[in-house]
Length: 113
Picture 1 (cartoon, rainbow, N blue to C red):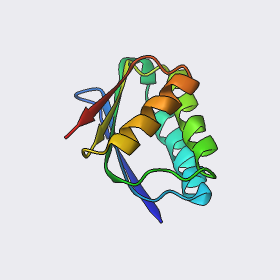
Picture 2: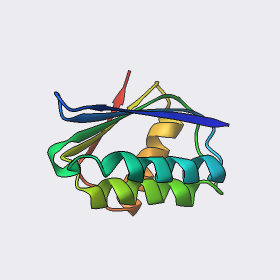
Picture 3: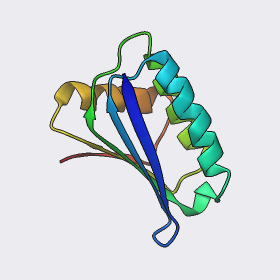
């Protein structure tokens, strides 16, 4: 089961998102619904989104379309920058990078912490 938490920091103009575990298609659907609700309260073009994925597991093939949909949302929302913070995991880094290329998300960075 995947867990996520959103925290808006208006002073720093950042949306901090913690994502952990293994996301199911249902978890991803809940994530997208909550994401849309959260970003309706501010202008994403003025913000950076920081996704703490240090305890996120590699997505399964059935969840990848939902992961791609999330990337498309980040791109369409117009965030100034999209940062993924991950634990040292070549497989997860490769998967996140591949999805970014597939969705043409250009203003992203992956930081291994």
